[in-house]
Image (cartoon, rainbow, N blue to C red; front, top):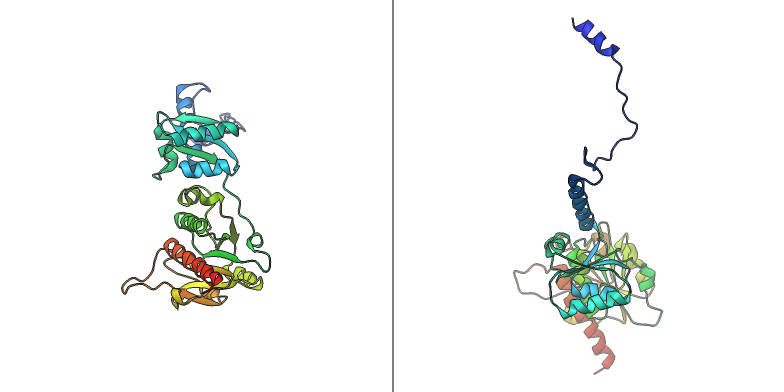
Length: 295
């Protein structure tokens, strides 16, 4: 009978469960030195390496070493002959940074399709500075770039690279979803992340208001703005750019002193934000030099 069956089952002594439970990621029924466990541990190490923050490529790794960045490990591709890689090994030895020569597959795994040139360095993401640290003392010229809602790490890195090329004092990343200063950002910056200080801000409009109070002229890239060739910037300016699809937010535009536009042929609605930043940064810095040199 069903009732008696339940009674018989309930009368049996229940097996005590251990109060300790194995972590979900530990493979069952494997000894500490068994081949299954060893293979699993190798896989785990690979997964951890893939999740770590890595600088990829000769330029990024060399710049980090020269800047004294904290690096705990460098991987170099086995059998790859390159004088630049040898110089990295020598610099790493000077700083007591361990170097391991690994198969190409290891580098390919952490690069996830990005170019690595046979070298990668594991490091903590670079820290952001404060906006106040970017403000020049009163009476000095100042040039800044503010990105409003730009979250793509490749675009951010490319803008940082342009900022280094044209002598911009710093870059401000405003809004949610700001990428960390490592990985794809460092790769797109091509070694120039160490040369340009980068600040993070919650709200672009509040940051522009602060900079205006410090004497900066707030310029925004907007279609329909003043043609770039007609703009004569003052000594202190901040250039604000939005994402390619949305542009500057309405709340951000409310804190602008002027807008400027890049003249383009009909049919072209917009440029990638990193391309626009490079064109505008070059034009504004050159306009400032022309004004200083006089007629």
